[in-house]
Length: 318
Image 1 (tube, rainbow, N blue to C red):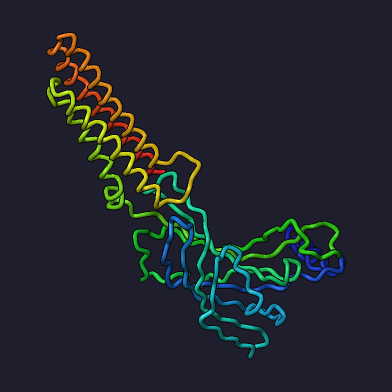
Image 2 (image 1 turned 45 degrees about the horizontal axis):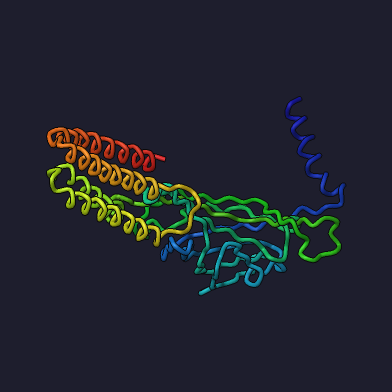
């Protein structure tokens, strides 16, 4: 009984398109092999990808040599292509170099994880005429190529439908809505941030340590303490501007902003403690000023290190 029910369901599904007068869309079997990813420009939010792309289909009108659409590409070029139609279907193989635009997530920079996206469509035929299916046989990228400063965590292919809320000027459509089949590749990468972190933040930490030395300068040398504190403040601000110049604009509060904000706050706390020491010295309370410096030195260092460890660990584990 169960087997008969399954056969009946399959028969209904097979005859439904014929009864409704609709022809099922042709399939385009699609595969990809990435040979290299390079020239990652974090400031301009783009990268370059070299790949082999192959498509197998029956309808010659699809003509992917002319109708290939890569929506997120700033530019792309075909360095090689070949077509084989000997078996009653079209087999197209092409080598592409694409400069892709993407959006970076920089909240946890330099411990960030990015997802590179590459997708293709046919510019002339919508999802009613053709759909993509993935060819997942074999590997999808060359395991020998290295992405400098990054690690490849995942590589996923999928197919779907992309909707456009426009008729592209076609007055025969009742509503301004069209859908195109898309073949999408998502490559997950994570940054190798160990050396980069110290390269970018070493100046900030040195600035803090210079200001921190003020606690161990005798309260009588108040001019030296103020000079070191204010100099460290400007050095930390300068370090932040240097890092920001290499990052895309962001409206969110990033790890870079957090660590520099903490550093600026504690440098300001050191300058404030120097002003407090000056007030105690003028009141002829030199011992009290010295004792206050020793206590604040331990508290400031402990809190500064704890906050840095907390936010860095949180960013690296997210």
